Image (cartoon, rainbow, N blue to C red; front, side):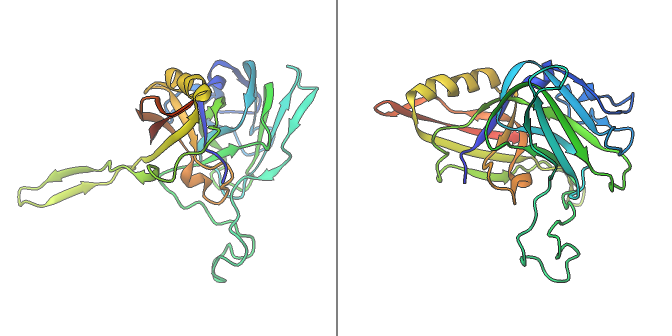
Length: 284
């Protein structure tokens, strides 16, 4: 288990997006809008159409990036590259082509499951699209990026994405405590009483909520990085939460775009160490 990772202060919102072939009415610029319903859509599934170049306003130490929610299938592959120059001739980083979805461990599926042999099960969350989440082994400092997606067997005939999140990152030096943390679904249904005294419930997407607490962070981190994280994010700024960057199997369930609904005081617990706690609610 790796320490949690929090992406905030989305730098790609202030960058320039280009490349690929995207529907004129649903352009790449929609990825810079916080409203997820304003999507961008590729013209088709050709590799030349489903790529994007990102020119940030300044170099960024990139710990992770997130692109979604999407209509990607579990058969998609992705490649992420970073460049030292705007002409994209000097390569700094190349992830290579890698299948993006998690593969079930061998022999954990029933033999009758269609995905038994390759371990890639179809996406099963109709209320949420899959996110393309890329976490490099080491942070990469670069200003110019290229994201390529290969999902040529997608039955929709195009790719949809709601948000590109490339931002500053805070990864605590000590992970959140086992007590005081949890992933839950917040009740969001519409209810009405009938004249006969019954109850009619209309289902809506129930947003995920993640709670976590940090008890003994060094004061230099607490009043430095954590203070900056709270100050910049506030309760309106979006945060992409990755509770465990090494959890490939459940990454899509545990990681999500959110806003903070609770940020506790920065407390001093013992000499030179202190704590705080957070609650994050999924952006739907």
